[in-house]
Image (cartoon, rainbow, N blue to C red; front, side, top):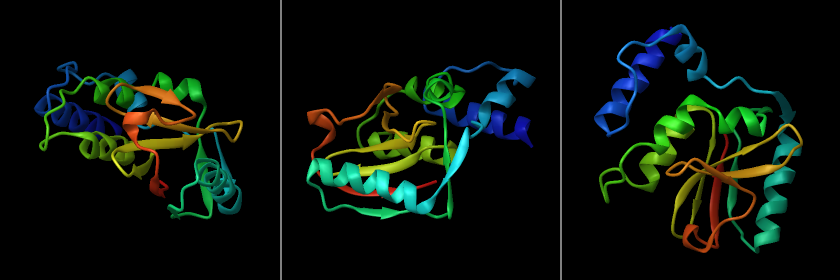
Length: 158
């Protein structure tokens, strides 16, 4: 199953302009699914996200699908196969733009966040720190840059 997912990601990535190896190795397939560090309860995760909304003066909404929410180490996210591959895909306005990049990471491990101007991803690390993930560059940050928007409309958990 992992090899099939790895091959599928490779095919999709190639179709969108990314470079990946012709043959999916065992190492590649291990890297396809990011392994969570741990879980935290939905109330703790909600509090982390609500704090960020309050800090930014936003009234966005939060949708968390599970009572136990996954956390990841920052280092494992930075080294993750999908983050590297997705950030290597060419941007094509109205065809493969911010929402498409964010959807690819959302399908893998990261939550989805929409602002008033942009779609990107998020996760919470092993220290219960919220990180925004810019899927077009692979960069992590605790705050949004001006071009990413200033009003969070919603967080969707994964």
